[in-house]
Image 1 (cartoon, rainbow, N blue to C red):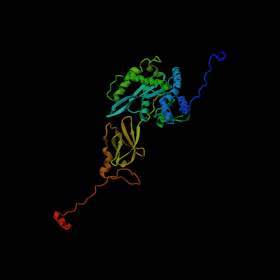
Image 2: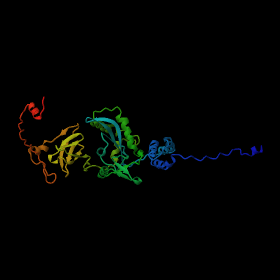
Image 3: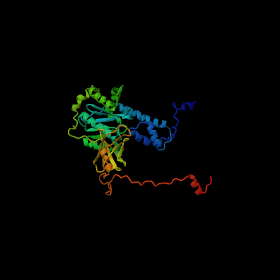
Length: 389
């Protein structure tokens, strides 16, 4: 009895078992670094550490990420809306809108949206490409639509804008985009990786396009689609009372204070490629053939497709050699007869190409008459060969 009374009323807790090591432990510093960068996708992180030698299960990665993700969501709900001064910033984004038949081919359909941060004025254009030339063209069209250029353009880490990020987050810009920005005097700015919500104004604009303009829409072709988009901008999107500002975007646009474009020639947004001309003086571009002067056969030439749907072919010295309409089919030949006149006349084709030699039309070779052949019966050949039939 005394032994029972001497015992403590609350039994002491058993000694804690030593924690067993986890296969995830060696990768915890890497995961914490990625979480600090804003990467909360457990499956993505699982594949990343799997490539680094992790042999455990994805469920362990999910359990590791879950408390960090919950804290991130709580912080995101407390975010204060970021507003910009007039003319300070425009935000840019692309949206994918399925496919479209364009010039006899099925192409991906994209929507380019630019939104001015202060007035919320929006520009919308549909294209069949999101490559560099189209990216610049859409910027230029938006500047003309707004009547000027903002001081800064914000977008996510598009490959047409950002080549890479260096140490300390330094952005290495795509050279054509950086040159375009310098020409128009705006500062390009890229969102922090995995923080696309910093350009929420334009992302809400893309959602608005999908929910208001796109639903139930019918159109004939790309040109018709863009005509309807422009009418929608002018009569609906930019005339509505904006839910945040309480003012129609067009009512605020005159006070944005954008840098005007008056007197500034448009930046050259041609699509550029190099092609070799063939022996028959043709250059292949996008499935069609275009002629060049005979003097420039078998040479590497520059091809420019302009926004006016022209194909310009430029020589090694920078001189324009040919200007053609852009063919929209496949296998078409767009030929200027004058390009072949020197060959037809047997004159020198043009300037010397290398070593002072000149290209000439080869004259037809003179062939002698075929010699007469004596006809003999087959038995004569058998007799000579000693064959008895």
